Image 1 (cartoon, helix red, strand yellow):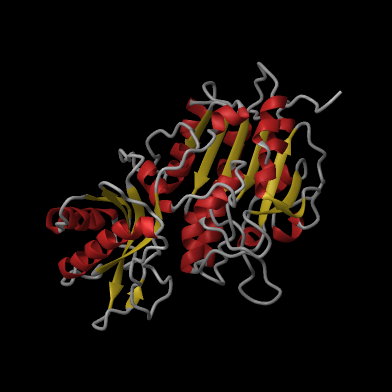
Image 2: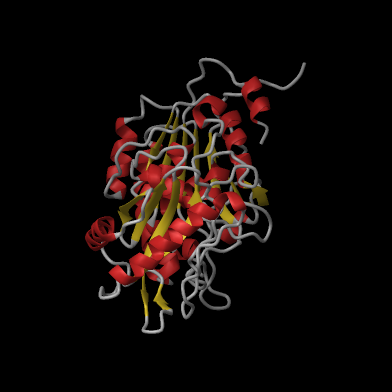
Length: 403
């Protein structure tokens, strides 16, 4: 995406509103040959009715065959080419919980995990321990860890996830992750990828060493894993690039974080889908762009729980009339990536997209699902970052290019 081109074409004083509704990990696979995906199996009368008046297609968040992480996948949906704009999830986690992150801090996303007597990982998420347990463990580590000449901060994010921030002089964040992302392996050492990051890597490794001793008698969370080491980047801001006053409505901190990273407002998290739509209705007159995030579709995909992922999609479908009653100029329903229950993990499969606007050319397809989207006018494998200029055009916010 050429941000300079977009800015040169922006119309002034247009009021078309855009809603980007993201069901995290929406894309799926059949559990058995000839079966339906989670989206196809869900009873979605409202989405199916809207599909008849919309354009359908399948987007890819990164490039063909590349499995996206949630951070880059959302940046792509926001119009940022994720190969050009890269950031680790540590920064996103920090911003998502409103941590006062300094530009020179090194941040990482952490998981509390379970290891056996040999130190091998048996559960990367420690049984998805509740947030209050993680909070107690973070407090314990904050109290016990002692590393001279630097400050180390632990903050709970949600459930088994936490934030690690290291603050000191001369730190860089090019550090390899300690999470092997498979069970049966031991946590990896925190290694510096370049010389500038050696000091920070040594500090992180000392933190891990001390944490291993402190957590040894805990159950099930007796160890931790670290991913997404990062520092705050200097990027173009979404509201200025697209001339849209923008708000993120999300329950999960990481997604508030990625939205704040690009300059969106992100009020305190809601606690239910209904509360998210309540906030959408409340703020309708105050913003031009609304990013609404649904998390549990991804969580159930990672758990391999086909029935519950289907149920979450159906809950969102039931709320769709409230969104349509606001009469958005553009409504995009999609996911950031695929998380098939059959795989229990993010995958490279293209993600279904429903693109509604009164100015679109409807495909006339009567359902919203992976196979239906293969027939849609948006195409079967287009870059996710092309959605934003398409949304701006359908909201009548772009001038023509050239004479």
